[in-house]
Length: 211
Image 1: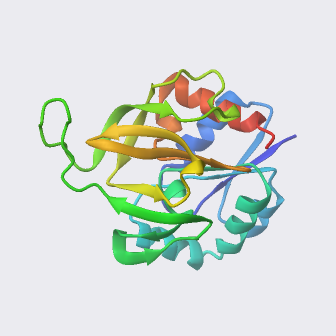
Image 2: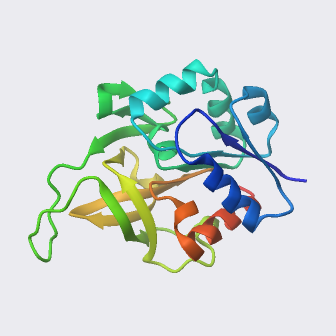
Protein backbone atom coordinates (compact mmCIF):
# COMPACT_ATOMS: atom_id res chain seq x y z
CA UNK A 1 0.00 0.00 0.00
CA UNK A 2 1.28 3.45 -0.93
CA UNK A 3 1.78 5.72 2.07
CA UNK A 4 1.27 9.45 1.50
CA UNK A 5 2.51 11.78 4.24
CA UNK A 6 1.05 15.26 4.52
CA UNK A 7 3.46 17.43 6.49
CA UNK A 8 1.87 19.11 9.49
CA UNK A 9 3.77 22.18 10.61
CA UNK A 10 0.76 24.00 12.00
CA UNK A 11 -0.15 25.95 8.86
CA UNK A 12 -2.94 25.44 6.36
CA UNK A 13 -6.04 23.35 5.94
CA UNK A 14 -4.29 20.00 6.06
CA UNK A 15 -7.43 17.94 6.58
CA UNK A 16 -8.93 19.20 3.32
CA UNK A 17 -5.82 18.06 1.48
CA UNK A 18 -5.95 14.68 3.22
CA UNK A 19 -9.63 14.17 2.43
CA UNK A 20 -9.12 15.06 -1.21
CA UNK A 21 -6.27 12.55 -1.59
CA UNK A 22 -8.26 9.87 0.23
CA UNK A 23 -11.09 10.52 -2.23
CA UNK A 24 -8.95 10.11 -5.36
CA UNK A 25 -6.76 7.30 -4.00
CA UNK A 26 -8.83 5.16 -1.62
CA UNK A 27 -6.18 2.43 -1.83
CA UNK A 28 -3.51 4.71 -0.33
CA UNK A 29 -2.71 5.24 3.33
CA UNK A 30 -2.86 8.99 3.94
CA UNK A 31 -1.22 10.30 7.12
CA UNK A 32 -1.10 13.88 8.41
CA UNK A 33 1.94 14.12 10.66
CA UNK A 34 4.50 16.42 12.26
CA UNK A 35 6.77 13.44 13.01
CA UNK A 36 9.93 13.45 10.91
CA UNK A 37 10.10 9.66 11.15
CA UNK A 38 6.65 9.30 9.59
CA UNK A 39 7.63 11.63 6.76
CA UNK A 40 10.84 9.68 6.19
CA UNK A 41 8.92 6.39 6.00
CA UNK A 42 6.35 7.65 3.48
CA UNK A 43 6.41 6.76 -0.22
CA UNK A 44 5.12 10.18 -1.26
CA UNK A 45 5.11 13.54 0.51
CA UNK A 46 2.77 16.52 0.27
CA UNK A 47 3.94 19.86 1.64
CA UNK A 48 0.87 22.14 1.86
CA UNK A 49 0.30 25.33 3.77
CA UNK A 50 -1.09 28.81 4.13
CA UNK A 51 0.09 31.76 6.17
CA UNK A 52 3.13 33.99 6.49
CA UNK A 53 6.52 32.69 5.36
CA UNK A 54 8.39 33.65 8.57
CA UNK A 55 5.85 31.79 10.71
CA UNK A 56 5.99 28.74 8.46
CA UNK A 57 9.78 28.54 8.49
CA UNK A 58 9.85 28.96 12.27
CA UNK A 59 7.28 26.20 12.81
CA UNK A 60 9.05 23.88 10.40
CA UNK A 61 12.24 24.16 12.42
CA UNK A 62 10.49 24.09 15.80
CA UNK A 63 8.97 20.71 14.90
CA UNK A 64 12.27 19.32 13.63
CA UNK A 65 10.97 18.80 10.12
CA UNK A 66 13.51 20.64 7.98
CA UNK A 67 15.80 17.66 7.34
CA UNK A 68 12.86 15.34 6.59
CA UNK A 69 11.42 17.83 4.09
CA UNK A 70 14.76 18.30 2.35
CA UNK A 71 15.28 14.54 2.16
CA UNK A 72 11.80 14.02 0.70
CA UNK A 73 12.34 16.79 -1.86
CA UNK A 74 15.53 15.05 -2.95
CA UNK A 75 14.38 11.43 -3.00
CA UNK A 76 10.66 10.79 -3.45
CA UNK A 77 7.58 12.12 -5.27
CA UNK A 78 7.02 15.51 -3.65
CA UNK A 79 4.06 17.87 -4.07
CA UNK A 80 4.24 21.43 -2.74
CA UNK A 81 1.06 23.50 -2.38
CA UNK A 82 0.92 27.31 -1.92
CA UNK A 83 3.46 28.08 0.83
CA UNK A 84 4.76 24.58 0.12
CA UNK A 85 5.86 25.97 -3.26
CA UNK A 86 7.29 29.22 -1.91
CA UNK A 87 9.31 27.59 0.87
CA UNK A 88 11.30 25.58 -1.69
CA UNK A 89 13.01 28.76 -2.87
CA UNK A 90 16.11 30.50 -1.57
CA UNK A 91 14.61 33.70 -0.13
CA UNK A 92 11.30 35.48 0.47
CA UNK A 93 10.51 39.19 0.58
CA UNK A 94 7.86 38.33 3.15
CA UNK A 95 9.69 38.95 6.40
CA UNK A 96 13.04 38.94 4.53
CA UNK A 97 13.59 35.30 5.45
CA UNK A 98 15.52 32.46 3.80
CA UNK A 99 13.56 29.51 2.46
CA UNK A 100 14.77 25.94 2.14
CA UNK A 101 16.96 26.73 -0.85
CA UNK A 102 15.98 23.68 -2.88
CA UNK A 103 15.44 25.96 -5.88
CA UNK A 104 17.23 29.19 -6.75
CA UNK A 105 14.99 32.22 -6.82
CA UNK A 106 12.95 34.75 -4.87
CA UNK A 107 9.44 34.94 -3.46
CA UNK A 108 8.08 38.39 -4.30
CA UNK A 109 4.96 40.36 -3.40
CA UNK A 110 2.42 41.53 -5.96
CA UNK A 111 2.89 45.28 -6.30
CA UNK A 112 -0.13 47.21 -7.61
CA UNK A 113 -1.16 44.67 -10.27
CA UNK A 114 -3.31 46.15 -13.04
CA UNK A 115 -5.70 44.38 -15.40
CA UNK A 116 -4.01 44.68 -18.83
CA UNK A 117 -7.39 44.82 -20.61
CA UNK A 118 -9.32 47.32 -18.48
CA UNK A 119 -6.57 49.19 -16.64
CA UNK A 120 -8.36 48.51 -13.36
CA UNK A 121 -6.21 47.96 -10.29
CA UNK A 122 -6.36 44.38 -9.06
CA UNK A 123 -6.69 43.40 -5.42
CA UNK A 124 -3.94 41.84 -3.34
CA UNK A 125 -4.17 39.08 -2.21
CA UNK A 126 -4.91 37.37 -5.47
CA UNK A 127 -7.96 35.39 -4.44
CA UNK A 128 -10.29 33.24 -6.50
CA UNK A 129 -10.30 31.22 -9.70
CA UNK A 130 -7.74 31.82 -12.43
CA UNK A 131 -6.34 29.95 -15.40
CA UNK A 132 -3.05 28.09 -15.53
CA UNK A 133 -1.16 28.02 -18.82
CA UNK A 134 0.87 24.81 -19.04
CA UNK A 135 4.30 25.84 -20.28
CA UNK A 136 5.53 22.29 -20.88
CA UNK A 137 4.22 18.74 -20.83
CA UNK A 138 4.36 16.86 -17.56
CA UNK A 139 2.66 13.72 -16.21
CA UNK A 140 1.05 15.82 -13.46
CA UNK A 141 -0.93 17.68 -16.13
CA UNK A 142 -2.35 14.45 -17.57
CA UNK A 143 -6.09 14.80 -18.21
CA UNK A 144 -6.08 18.51 -17.30
CA UNK A 145 -6.85 20.99 -20.06
CA UNK A 146 -4.46 23.82 -20.80
CA UNK A 147 -5.70 27.10 -19.27
CA UNK A 148 -7.79 25.13 -16.77
CA UNK A 149 -8.92 27.24 -13.82
CA UNK A 150 -7.72 26.62 -10.27
CA UNK A 151 -8.33 28.34 -6.94
CA UNK A 152 -5.71 30.79 -5.63
CA UNK A 153 -5.21 32.65 -2.33
CA UNK A 154 -1.85 34.45 -2.10
CA UNK A 155 -0.07 37.81 -1.96
CA UNK A 156 3.36 36.50 -2.98
CA UNK A 157 4.61 34.56 -6.00
CA UNK A 158 7.82 32.74 -6.90
CA UNK A 159 10.39 34.02 -9.36
CA UNK A 160 12.74 31.15 -10.29
CA UNK A 161 16.27 31.83 -11.51
CA UNK A 162 16.09 28.83 -13.84
CA UNK A 163 13.05 29.25 -16.07
CA UNK A 164 13.38 25.60 -17.14
CA UNK A 165 11.65 24.59 -13.89
CA UNK A 166 8.51 26.55 -14.78
CA UNK A 167 5.61 24.24 -15.63
CA UNK A 168 2.67 26.63 -15.39
CA UNK A 169 1.98 30.36 -15.56
CA UNK A 170 -0.97 32.52 -14.57
CA UNK A 171 -1.92 36.08 -15.50
CA UNK A 172 -2.63 38.52 -12.70
CA UNK A 173 -1.59 41.95 -13.89
CA UNK A 174 1.45 40.24 -15.36
CA UNK A 175 2.29 36.59 -15.87
CA UNK A 176 3.69 34.80 -12.81
CA UNK A 177 4.92 31.27 -12.16
CA UNK A 178 2.08 29.16 -10.76
CA UNK A 179 3.63 25.69 -11.11
CA UNK A 180 7.16 24.32 -11.12
CA UNK A 181 8.57 20.89 -11.89
CA UNK A 182 12.04 19.46 -11.43
CA UNK A 183 12.89 15.77 -11.22
CA UNK A 184 10.72 14.33 -8.41
CA UNK A 185 9.31 17.73 -7.34
CA UNK A 186 6.07 19.29 -8.54
CA UNK A 187 4.73 22.36 -6.74
CA UNK A 188 1.85 24.74 -7.36
CA UNK A 189 0.76 28.15 -6.09
CA UNK A 190 -2.94 27.28 -6.28
CA UNK A 191 -4.91 24.94 -4.01
CA UNK A 192 -5.83 21.70 -5.83
CA UNK A 193 -7.88 20.58 -2.82
CA UNK A 194 -10.17 23.59 -3.44
CA UNK A 195 -10.15 23.38 -7.24
CA UNK A 196 -12.99 20.97 -8.00
CA UNK A 197 -12.47 18.34 -10.73
CA UNK A 198 -9.18 19.72 -12.09
CA UNK A 199 -7.65 19.86 -8.63
CA UNK A 200 -8.73 16.33 -7.83
CA UNK A 201 -7.26 15.14 -11.12
CA UNK A 202 -3.92 16.76 -10.22
CA UNK A 203 -3.92 15.01 -6.84
CA UNK A 204 -4.87 11.72 -8.49
CA UNK A 205 -1.99 12.15 -10.93
CA UNK A 206 0.37 12.69 -8.01
CA UNK A 207 -0.61 9.43 -6.32
CA UNK A 208 0.36 7.53 -9.48
CA UNK A 209 3.30 9.63 -10.63
CA UNK A 210 6.63 7.80 -10.92
CA UNK A 211 9.37 10.38 -11.55
